[in-house]
Length: 274
Ligand SMILES: [Zn+2]
Image 1: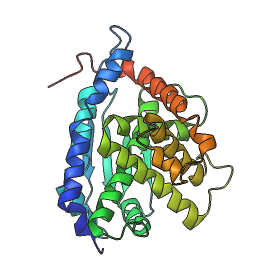
Image 2: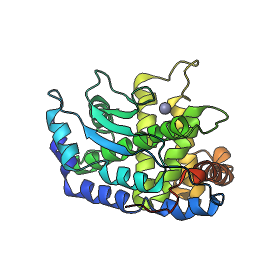
Image 3: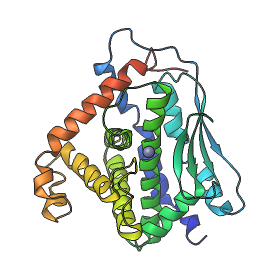
Image 4: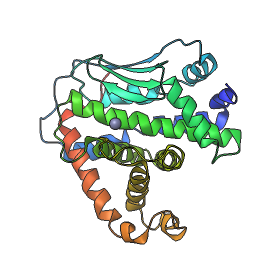
């Protein structure tokens, strides 16, 4: 597993810290949107599980050592009233995948997925530390995407349109609220979809996911929509066509408002918990 040890490199850990510290920023936005006395009974907790694996032993050790998801999960437990226990599990799946499994009650991130992100993003990032950081970033994007599925499934949230698009939106909404490090994670999530589109061709048209290129442009659009001045370079460098960019601010505002309104009734009653 070349370069896996780089996952534990200092810059990446700094990024994990940055991502960890500020998830609670979501609270103020959600509290504003919350209906009075709407908090639900909290009877569950998310729990991080790093399953042992022989094939990806070094990778698993690095991720466990870095406590990749631990702080986010602690924050999510503190913020939301989960109706039942759920695992956030890293495991050997036999395929490069990540998914929410309502039957098992788990969000599963396969070691193969992290490994495939490493191989894919290597084409964009030469520096091993940059690569490690990008892999963590795109893995965080996918974690929050799967978290979106879990919110919808566990809290019985309504959706209109494609659920897959809605949970890409959730990932961007959460990451943007995490500040600069979160925005970088969302951009690496977009780059990963851009690479997928080039490498494996687009998904079939009947697939529930939007095409990888569409997901790439959607994420860029929503990030741009948070601050058109800050992210003007995305348009200037031709990554995001002007015709789409013109709508991105209002597009992001609407989806941000929608997700925060949907999640607000599921906040912990007090907003904090021991
Ligand atoms: Zn999905």
